[in-house]
Length: 296
Image (cartoon, rainbow, N blue to C red):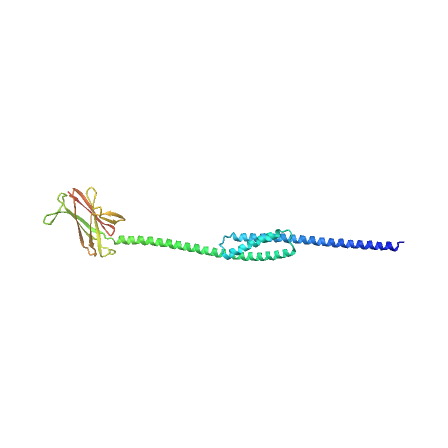
């Protein structure tokens, strides 16, 4: 039979055992809860790290568009980069409380929203730039086409002006040459011998030309001796047929498109020699007429 003292000891042992069991159960549940909480915290931390990396990649992708940023956008990007670096550093910390995670979650959400708005603005600017580039290229093409057309038109106008100028130039008709001996009394006697000749007289009329200006025209004469040498003063220069030339003599005539016969005298400063002398007349920058005379 168990006495009263032994019974009390048994009760005490039972109470102690129950207390130990309760304590163990409490510690087990607490440890399990903490383990679950630790797992949850680490999982959320890893998720946030990945989210921040995605946000940074998105920012890099947008900046790769090579859009010229405004001062405002440059400052916003600088702030975003600083926030990303701050979050990365915070998430690398091994001891994060639930409060730290809550703060990080909020900041990541704000950062995600900011980068989205920033990306939308950059894409909008890129579209505007693409439109402006298209407009610029279109204007360049239009300007080039207009310039080309203007050049073609100028060329055609130049060609037309040249044709009109050529068409308006005087052309001599019935050009003839006679050699004369000049007597002491001033009388002129036509001769055919070089030894007695002193001057040449060129007679010509002007072909009717409706385009030619009814005005004074400068006539240039070039005389070539039988050897083909030009007889001219080196200082006597004019332009004709697209080049600069020396001339023997010059005069001015009044053209009225009335079949007037014109005369041009040239006194040879040197003795004439036997052979054929040839002459060329020029007017308005073009060849006007030619003729020749043979002296015995």
